[in-house]
Image (tube, rainbow, N blue to C red; front, side, top):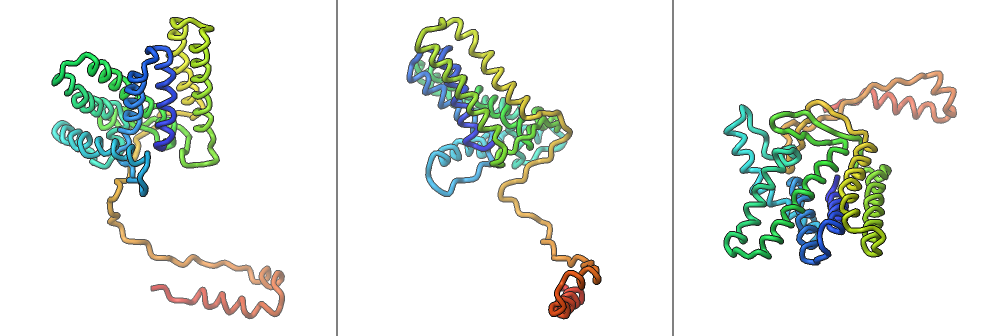
Length: 286
């Protein structure tokens, strides 16, 4: 899926969990939302730089963390432990369980550094909530991408077996992503309403929250026709120049039925058409 799809679903799922599992504290919810949004973007290190400044520029900056720090370090480790190191531009590096685990370890190390320096309990709490959001965002990213035609390779580079669905995120005629967003929004609205009105107790809502989220994700996978496939080809490296020479135009043979042509064309046009066909079939191609 594309960036806006990942962000929308990650924010709704995070709010659904925060509405019942955490106290309604603005700082805690903000930390969880920030972590989920970062986790939803970090695997897409091949994101192109937006032409205009905006929210997508912030998302692109987050993706550069994976591109400039995590992916090179990951490839260095793999080159020393695998017979054949994966390409640094292969998108499967961060769309796998080993990949997101490595990215999370790097993010956790940087995030917890202020905690060790300050020893502040409030900073520790916010850092923990942020990292929980990062885990949730990256998990949702993998689940959402396995529903697409491109799919993911969950054990890459140790295995190239892929899991893919049938969704084409850039196809406007495919309305399933919009349907998923609507379903997530409706469930979130119901939980917020139940929490605000007190019709159901908080412990009961907490017991219903995670099963509801699992049902939403399971329904999304079911509607995406997810299947286990063979080896997934590597993604095109952004900015890599193609070494193959451009294909020259090759004339295709022209087959024309003369009786059909004569019977279907007025007599005053026949000579012009035969002259055009003679020129077409006898021209030289360099």
